[in-house]
Image 1 (tube, one colour):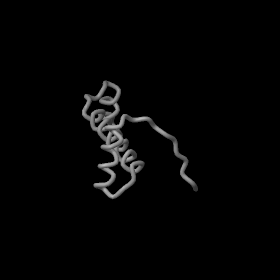
Image 2 (tube, rainbow, N blue to C red):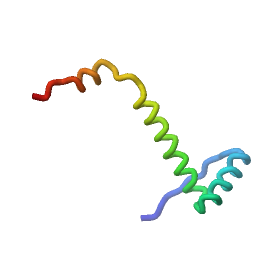
Image 3 (cartoon, helix red, strand yellow):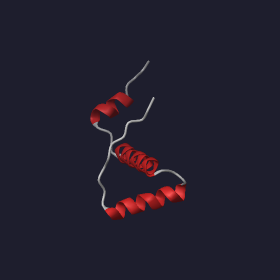
Image 4 (cartoon, rainbow, N blue to C red):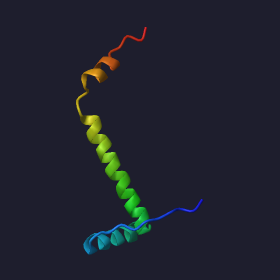
Length: 66
């Protein structure tokens, strides 16, 4: 199945940094951007997991399953 693409606009400095990172990792700029997006999603998950549980979540976790 062919991959569809689109164009994103970034400033020149960001583009140069993406090219440098891609070169260092022996990947394409597109793969480097995809990895960056994945890392940002993972960071957000870590932030979300560090938040205190709300009352519904606490109640659910404390529920008697017996």
